[in-house]
Image (cartoon, rainbow, N blue to C red; front, side):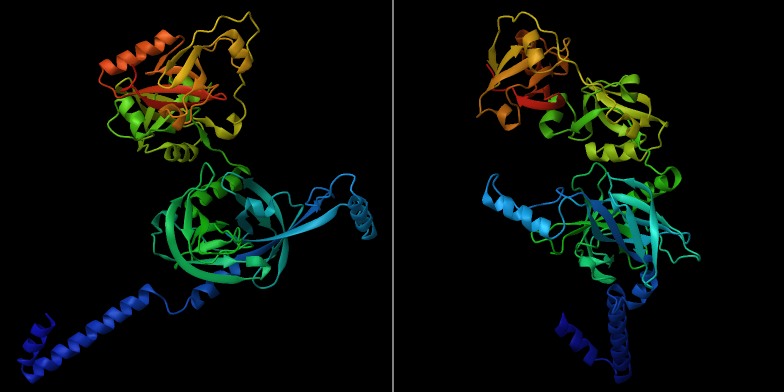
Length: 491
């Protein structure tokens, strides 16, 4: 192609050849300009714009002696007296000490609201905010949300404060430039640049939605902002993944769309108010989908329906939630986040897959914060005369029906029914999927089982329906979950 282009241009008249060369140069200049716009030569102007709204946070906490780490000395050892005498000579004894910690934050309003991480200010009895100008102000805690590790503070200033606004984190794309600003390792105001490395990361929280970035984040950056190139906050720097404790290019910022909802509620109520459906759920795996006759492995499988909004609306264990308030449910994580972001008291339509067809329920949401810890614990059954055990090995599981003695041992309600796993083949599929001795199978094929014959009947029915696996509801330590086990080799 290059050879053809050269021969063609040489055949042009000199005037046209000059125009062609000029057009080529203009094209190259445009390409260079586009490349330059994609990667700025400097972030200095943006840094000047956003720096005044970023703050350093110093917290102070009184720590009682003996609550922190201390040398490990064998009891009765002569070194035990030595360390006690050494500590006494230092004048410490059991005197409380004041401990301080550092973090970052950012101002979101001219009247002094400041966002940071909850772990930065947790248990602090004094919080000092240092601005880029060097001015310091004391801050009070307006509200915190440990689930997203967000805290909202307030300072009183005699003039309007510089502030930054939240951006739409959903528009952040992998590869976009981002800037992290804060107080790394207590070194004061510092800026680092990088890109969005990944989206929708989950660490350990129920409502996690982290942006992963390679912009350097270190200890002390916690609570600081992650900016896009428009100077908007798209994340709150929260955690790093590192074997050394220092930045290795894997940092996590809580997405601004999550943070903004939390901050709005903390401003209005001083606490969070999340919607509550009142179900225990698990993801729908491929084998579970096959066992239930679902077309695809999607949705949230209901494992238990304690007293609450869902139970009042008629939801049952074994239902698969496929749609919530008009939004498709892909998995348990998406459902939890969607429900949590829905207004308390709102009545929503929930579509469930039940016994081969869909059913729509109308559910009025409760408040999660009020419901947590409010579900009563089952009481142990009364002691009774032990019954002769009836055991049978099925699908690698040695099973026996629940007796009053077993209910007492397993701390189950005296009305509980099911089959107890008394032994398990460690080479079986059931063992690979986490079943253990002491687990209780309460349902099979989405029907209750109280005897060995009940389970045999469920297996026969599944085979007759052409199923390759059977769905079982298993309770381990009181926590329910569904497990699909292959029945093709069962005799």
